[in-house]
Image (spheres, helix red, strand yellow):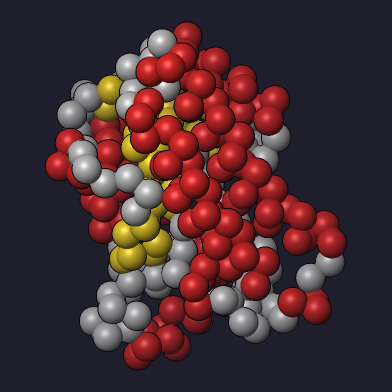
Length: 248
C-alpha cells in the first residue's frame, strides 16, 4: 500500500492513530491540526522517526479557503492525494438541545459537515479519472450517534453525523465510475478525549455496561478499520458505513 494520505484532525485520537498506521503502511501523510501544534508535531516526529514521510499543516477545515491551501500544500510537498480521511470533528458541549446557542450549533455543523464537504470536493477534483486523476479513496469518520440520536447530550453532533452518512452514500454513487471509493466508519464508545471535552469525562465508564463486548474501543482499532477500507482488500466496497461499536 502506498500513496499520499490527508488525515484531517490527526494531531490526536483516531486521527493520530490513523496517520501513524497509514505511514507504517507506506503512505506519505499530511497531519492536519487546528490548535495544538505541539501534539500534532509529535505525530509527525514519530512517523519520521520510523522512516515514514509526513508533513504538518494547520488548517480549520470548516473554512473553504483554508482547505484549498491545505490541499495545495500537499500537492506541492507530497504529490497528488490518493487517500482522504475526513476525521476532523467536534461534539460541542453536552446538553439538551434547548441549551445550545446558535453559534455553538453552527460550529458543530460547520466543522463536521461543511468541513467534510469542502475536503471531499478538493479530493474528488484531484482523484477523479474524469478530471485526469488516477482515482483514490475517501473514508469519513461518522458515529453511532447518527442512529442513536444523541438525546440529552449532543443532538447537533448526532445530526451532523447523520449528514455524514448521507454524504458518504451519495458521493459514493456519484463518483463510483471515476475511480473513487467513498466509505465511512461509525465508531461507538472509543477511549479518546472527545467525551471529556464535551463535559462528560466520566461518561465512558458509566455507559460501558451498555456495550455487549464489555469494553471501550480504541483509536488504533478505528485506524485499522480505516486502513482496511483504504486498501485493495475492500476494493468492491463503496457507500458502506462500517460500525465499530462492540455490539452496541
